[in-house]
Length: 251
Image (cartoon, rainbow, N blue to C red; front, top):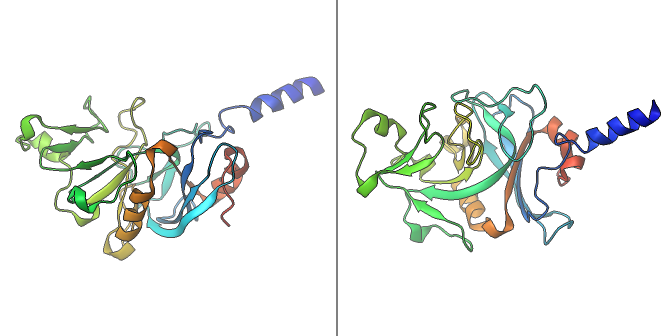
């Protein structure tokens, strides 16, 4: 019996539920920790390390952020959500938590005014840019551009058009929740870091929002070659997973 129990224990320790979702060659980590599952705000840190097995060193933070208006829920990313956990759904107003790759930056700002590092991509948004949130579309949770630079001329296209005159979305950075190549329709779309509203007085629809100066600092710091990862968790989950995920001690 002891041998059986030992085998089961080893199997659990090596299971995806406890294994770290952070790639060993990731050298940049963005971490946000909320007080609990119902929180609409969190503290965010930027950390880096020089190589595999090296300890995380603080680059910036903590930065105040705003989260979804209805709190947090497990999302779809690099991690495996706990068995039976409630998952992010389209329109639920929750911020997906877990570990996620960090993608491209987008905005309506003149590219010359956006500081970028190395091979970081900035997509200059115009009238022909759409981000599809229609759960019935084959392009769900993807950026597409209308051909020949034309503007939306159908109701569907107008609903998917990326925001052009919204200060909170003039600059943003994609959080790869429910992203290619494993998009599940209805599991949540358009999750970004973006600028907060009313000086942090309003929650988001599921994104992570922060002051413009902090977002610019984050985008200027991100290096795609460092395979950056965003980890966002309620404090209780952060404490529970800190050792197995190799997370830095922040409090």
